[in-house]
Length: 470
Image (cartoon, rainbow, N blue to C red; front, top):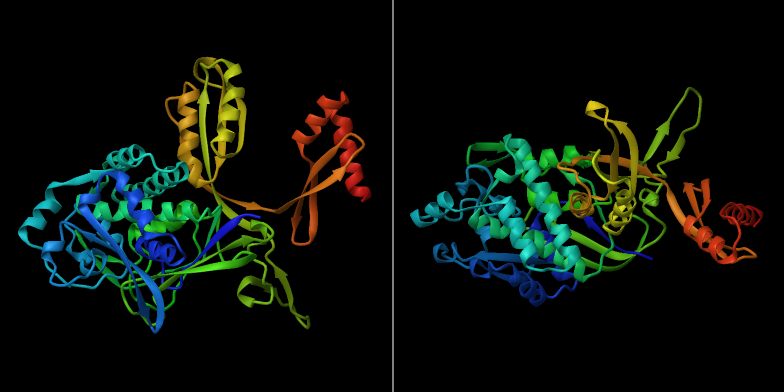
């Protein structure tokens, strides 16, 4: 069974809330400090966490105390609480805005801080180099790069500039780096395999930014929601609830958005936001073992909020449970006309090792009537960068197109049959309780065919017959 995490976000999501929940769930703060030190920016911040109360409920608050701001503070509030988004001077993007529900107008910046705001920036390539150079655990590096890529893509789309030109304010960028890399470190430490998120509250009102007031949800958050078709709703709270950093983490890692998947809950982590709101300002992280598969993501048909109801004249109500789920996938494609065809087989194997869900090619005719192939790769968002790296390294392509799509998936389980030649695994796909597809595993049939010197077709036929007979 897979270890999964469900992020319940009744008051939204932000990077510091994710880290608070992870620490509350048992991730050692000392471990995070040690690993984040590898990034080489530890002189810019101090990290701490403490238990706080939100509407009488206890949760863990995570703080990033920025070195540039410490002399300016009249108390011991952390940067995400003390610095209001309205104080940003970054011309494009200030990552300090990505902390959650900061205390408004707590402090004013002096000339020195304003000078830092104007003269020092980090761009996406520099942040990517920092992450790669840190030699973090492989999953942490891949997830962190993917989240920053998502965040830069969203900001770039909003401002109409290339992602590489998005400015990350040097002080604020430390916040964003800690939030993103720290969250990925915590999830890797807990050995989480799959991630699910609740629908997101929209919030409301406005926030101050460098170019004036922005409506909430902010443009970058709206762009991320649009790209990943995130389900949203209003909880009546007119505050910024979902920050761009938190939203980018969710959109990068989520297998699906919705109610909790079937799971055995083993641990709960509670991460506090900065404000007291009408409801407890807490992100609740559920950790446990998965039961069934992602196709069971919506299972409670007794809850009318997750069912479809049809009524006709003089007829009873008929409720159709939603039995299949959707997940976000990335589709990468490129056309190739100058590569030895033998290399394509190796590319397939390398892409699957990098995390691809599926790889296929299509014969095409290119300019000047040259024959070529269209290489398509489907993967989860967190493996997009790794798959692109393989495509650039192992093929002659100079460019890769990427798109984000939603796919509907069936519940799948593996059963086994014992043939006269050996054991074969059978993949059984269901929609609800209805079996819609049954297929013996190719590799099992191929291995038996080689060892027993019988045809693959015979092994496949026999395994399928035994399953149906059973």
